[in-house]
Image (cartoon, rainbow over all chains, first blue to last red; front, side):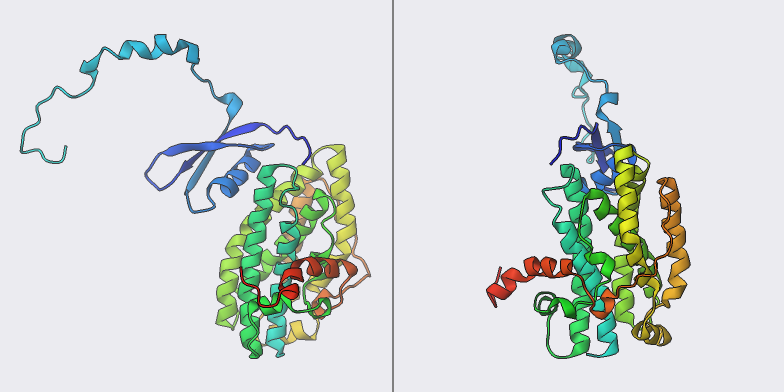
Length: 95
Length: 249
């Protein structure tokens, strides 16, 4: 295999109509069309999906793991944000 | 073997030989993603070949299975188009060969869906769906190579010049093709040509590749005239089945 440096793409697959696209992995491709075709060949071989999104990995802005304290820690002591303080009437069965 | 069985063998063998050729790329393609891409197309073609071969065996009525026909026939008994057996060469050569035949099968299977032979129509319907993707895949690569770097353009252009003479066979109907068309079991080859020329021409012009002039040269793989390459290909493909008769997986 020759040393090719094709850009990396992230792949999102929608498994059924009505569901959301989910990240399933990444692949290399030279352009968007090739990325969709590779995604089809790599990630939908066993009928995993009905729709494919691809996005250049370099176009994704990610949070910095070093900022985890500042970003996520403050949510920890705010238990009132969880909807666990409501009393559910016994008549409601499907909530 | 009846005329119809012989015709079905032609369909089967072109797909089978192409499947074997593409399978040889696995582990050698320019990227692992292409290994998978080529293998997927190869598996589609192999599936088509199995259906056609099984049907040819039934039509023949001598109890030969798809495996018997695939592994126990010699090169001169193969009925694939000569284009299919041209060596893999470099990636451009494989892709150009694949595209020319994908575009051909696209026209052929679309027309074969309305065959008077319902069994052929069913196989063609399945194959036509797969082939639409194959054309997209190989056509995309022809454009990428042709309209790519100087190196890739040169390789694609060389492949096209080398392979083009073998396309004459695709539409050159012999008595068997004509009798199948008359019985409306198969489409008339002449009727398929304009669609193929349009599809191939569109991709070649997008790829900035020139359509080579028609060649006087004719080679009829579909009548069992084959070059040396098919012998090597079948030797590798058939080795196990012949060396260990009755071996099971």
